[in-house]
Length: 222
Image 1 (cartoon, helix red, strand yellow):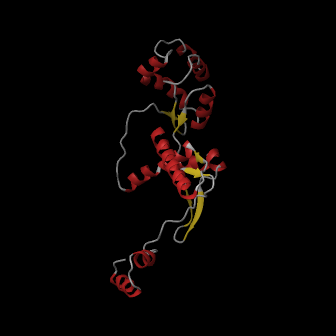
Image 2 (cartoon, rainbow, N blue to C red):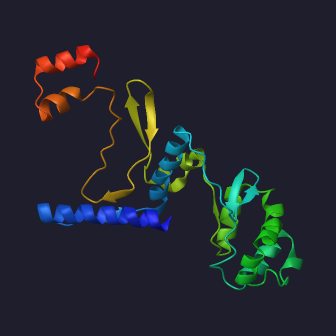
Image 3 (cartoon, one colour):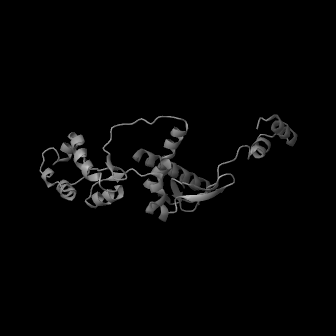
């Protein structure tokens, strides 16, 4: 995640430096981690289109009532957080369990920890778990589906998703930009149709004559 966000920030920085050198003024760059990672999910859909089976690795995810949650209790939490989580889950007896009283212990005994949390999480919606544990200053997260992203408050408020009219498919919702520049609007266009730019590219850029383009078209090469 941090790698992907960093690449987007680097790309944006290089672009605004180019604008500064070419036009003589700088710009403010707005990077949203959530928007970057939303755009990055396209790689999963591309792999699926080409029939690539995703590689499954061990994770700290537990199943919630309507999806998957990462409890985020193995690192980055204060010492007093675990007893509060135990009280919340209705298992105060685990607050002093030596397997779980420290972050190191919870990492070492991760599978036992996930079993304890999983029994509670299975009865709760993932967003409720996310907000409840975040309020206890954990680094909890949940696995968002496309449907979740389309209604996510941050993405809606920032108008991240945009609807474009497609001549074949009608109105289609598209993700926006992974970064924003203060003086530039992200111009989102529909994908080109097959052969749409033949005349512009072959004629305008490569120098083919109108007669040559007609012959190419008749031959079925484009």
